Image (cartoon, rainbow, N blue to C red; front, side, top):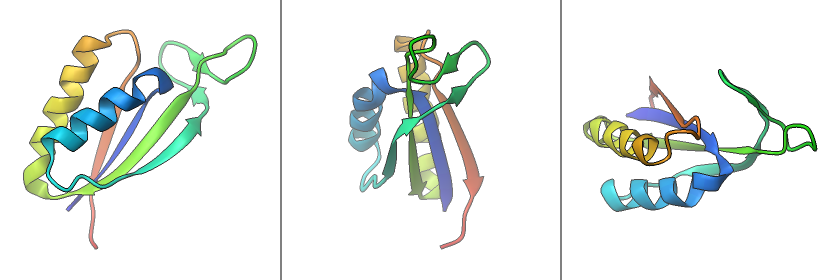
Length: 94
């Protein structure tokens, strides 16, 4: 089992959800709808100065689905190259 965490601009949330659900059978997840912070290039703080915001998605997937998840996120990153989409993964026990 692998825990994946995806942090991305709120503007691509629906695209990520649909792509993951469409490519990984029984893809279940939790969404944290408002994530504020600073990445490599800019801040997403939901303020007048830094108005954008992020969201986070957490999911536990089977090991066999990890490569698919990486490919899905790579395709989304290609489509939305300026959005700072990141996926992190760690082994998990349930």
